[in-house]
Image 1 (spheres, chains in turn green, brown):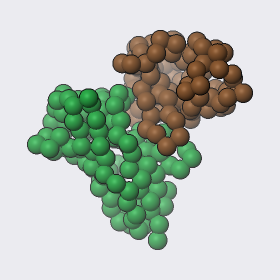
Image 2 (cartoon, one colour):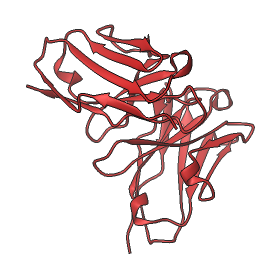
Image 3 (cartoon, helix red, strand yellow):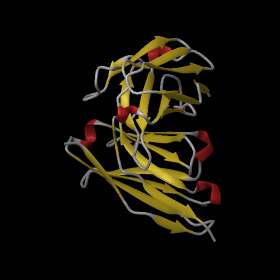
Length: 116
Length: 109
């Protein structure tokens, strides 16, 4: 069965970076892209970006341009999302999902807390 | 950027009733590139509907999606206890960002 398993919770200081991993199984990793979505506490969903699994193509929400890097490692079927220059309003649960723009299978989420 | 507005914000219904959730886009969502998700507390979103009206794998047929252009609807024909959750629409038809609506909370009356 398709599964996306994400890395654990992180506590970061303002200005730091965080890298969240998303390990896929149960399908051919290179056949689908990965999208990243975040959800601040008590808030709705925010689409962050998309990456292809094997060609390095990416699409970003413009507000994250310059701070967000999405990569994949096809040898381990793992996607990564790195967000830099963290601020307190980056505190959220970060999700990966399989798909091109909409996500059909989702990871369990990774809580990133930004606090001094 | 396409803005999606969902209504109502909260919908209070009883099991067995019919639920109708609305999602309106600020401009046309080409070729019905509209998805619906269900999210329960502490869980990741679950894809229900893709392409405006196609149910995702394993989704019960009491869930249906309709609409085109700027107006879309998610209908749950007869509510089951497990259907009470927050529902989000998402458009993915234009250039990024592929925005979400703010959500509709479906609660037990």
